[in-house]
Structures are given as C-alpha cells and as structure tokens.
Image 1 (cartoon, one colour):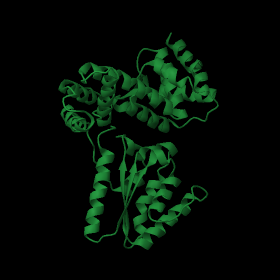
Image 2: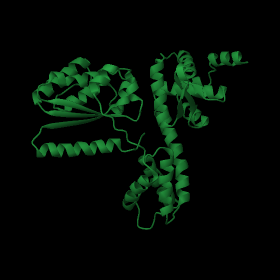
Image 3: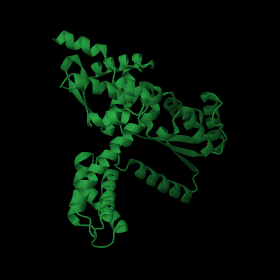
Image 4: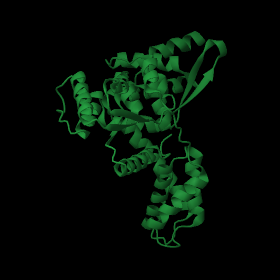
Length: 351
C-alpha cells in the first residue's frame, strides 16, 4: 500500500549506512531512482552511471553499451554500490521486460572487489509474479512488507505534525482522531491522513473559524477524495484509460462483477476501434493491479478450485467521475460512446 513509510525508511537506512561506512573507512556509493519518473531501463542505468561519475548521454546509446559503462565504473572504483529502485514494478510492467533486473543482479559475477546491491520498493504485493524465475533466483531477495498504519499509529504521526502546523489549542482532539480513523479505515495511508488534516485546517481558516473541528474533517474528506480521483484519472496512461472504459462498459451491461477475461475481451475490441495495438493479457492484468492499488477499481481474487483463479473486477469510483475526467481526451471520448459488439453478443446469448 501507499503511504506506509517504505521510501522514507529506505532513505533513512541509506543515510545511516553512509555514516557507518564513513566511520569505518569503507567506500560506499548509493543511488536512489524512482522508476516511474525515470521511465525506461536506459535512463535508470544512465542515472546509476552518473552517480558513479560516468557521463552518459540522455539518449543515443544501446542499453548494452550503457551497462558496460556501469560495469567498468564499478570495477574501477572497487566499492560497494547500493541501488534503490523505487516503484520498481512500473519499470517491469511498462515494458513487460525484466532483463534490466537480471543484468543488475548478475553484475557481481564480473566484479572481484566491489559489489552492487539492490533494494526494490513496490506498492504491488504481486509484483514478483511478473518476474522471470531466473531473475527471482538471481535476486536471492529478502522481502519486507510494510503493513498499513493503524488508527493509533496515524494519530501519533498527526499529533507530532500538528504541533508544527497549528497554534496551541486550535486543533480539536476529536478532529485529530477522526482524521486518523478515516485514513486507517481506507488504506492506513499516512499521506492520506496528513492531507485530510491539512485541508481541514484550510477549510476552517477560509471560514474564519478559530478551531479545527470534526465537521471540517468531514468536509475535507469529500474534497480530498474528489481531487484525488480527478488527479489520478487525469494522469493515467492511454492503455489504463481504455481498460477503465472497458470496466465501465461491463458495469453498464451487467450488475455483477466482471472477470478478467471479459474485461480483456472488451479492452481488445476498444483498442481495435481506436486503432491502438492492444497489450497482452498479462500486461493488462498488471494494469488492473495498478488501478486496484489506486482505488479506481476493486479487484478481488476468486478461486475456482482445480479450475484455477481469476479476478472479479468492479469500479471503485463513481461512473460519472470517470466519464467526466476521461471525456477530456478525444480518443477516449469516442470510446465512451462506442458500444462493444462482444457485449451485445453475450447479452444475446444470455437471452
């Protein structure tokens, strides 16, 4: 889940490690890369090279050439190099390729003194399902799961932050506890709790009121949720938008949840209608996981015994919020008015 402290804990550990290494005269280099922001394997490796003082052009080289430069830099330095790949799942899911991870995990075989270590951060518990068995074997990973914060833990976090943000006796204790309870009841997300408290304070200030009360938190909850959904929908890549329209079409056509196979069938037809090359079903399953993490859809795994498992998919936000946000994209707008033939065939067969 998001907002459970994975990134900040990792950064804290890196700082402690660097201090310890310096105290003991050990050469340690560290690099933090957000894979979702960086975008491609090339740019990830280029960032790592630059950390080691190796100049790499923004584009123009083969990935293999940049990897060779990274290996040579590590051989020259004979130092430890600890790499943090935040949102590592975005890198693999975007390209449907885990070869970069495989190459990074095998670099140590060509080093005599130095070494490279990897820390991967992901919000997707099923991320490893996307990895080739060879990559999993090379990683030899130790998994740490950050559980969602409880209401009491969130209360303690908010209490500390509120001392910085508010004057004494401005924040009602009941309002503080409500912020913590609402955030804990959803995902145990500290960022969500802090957003609620901040917006509640802004609402009270706009109303020229001297205290932040529970009703301000309730009003803040509605505003934060509306803004969050709008922001998330606006930032979705094309295939995630088409996939969301597929779930929307299925929800209009039937009252029960839809299985992954049905969603994929509608998605493929919509891609054809929009002259867009469809992704594989495996990639689409990964995108559904991402939408589930964002709260845009609800994906529940259902077991059919010896017949295997599938996901039951439903919208996690109101349909009108989706149509309003996605309708600003002309291509997706045309799909919102498109009636998938595969749904009509299913309805005809059911009749």
